[in-house]
Image (cartoon, rainbow, N blue to C red; front, side, top):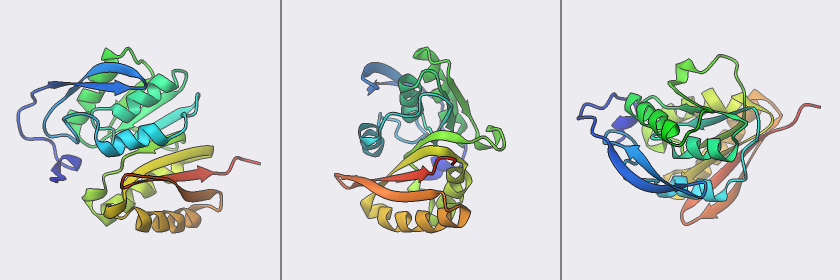
Length: 207
């Protein structure tokens, strides 16, 4: 799979396509395009994540790391209308499409932005992500080190990772990395479904 869409501005024509998807139980015609992740609809990893995770926090700030055209962020926003969802992606075309899809669904609790546009110091009550494993281990580790320590006290993050793309070794690394940040974090595998692992990160509530 070509991973250029994780880093580069797409060079091909920006031709929107329509795909039928189901988000939080609602059928929806989403806009996608070439040059982004999973332009043909909801990929299997994201489907697995959305099926297996518990409901997001109902208030506060929620985060989708690497939002693409928006299936995770839009689901968060529909399930938690009183919360605010931050949909983050480095791909400008993906951000444009995610914003258009949020508008089409009437979701005014979604902010789609580049990573550097998220306010410094903001913490998140729920983080969901199908992280870009194929960008390589150093870049992936840097990405997760940026966002996961920003989990709010009492919050939870869930990641979906293919078993054959290093889910188990990533679990071991996450435990080590977050232990170095704070003793408040715990990391475990909560599901294994058709070759995908669901990894959960929890931050202990403030005493």
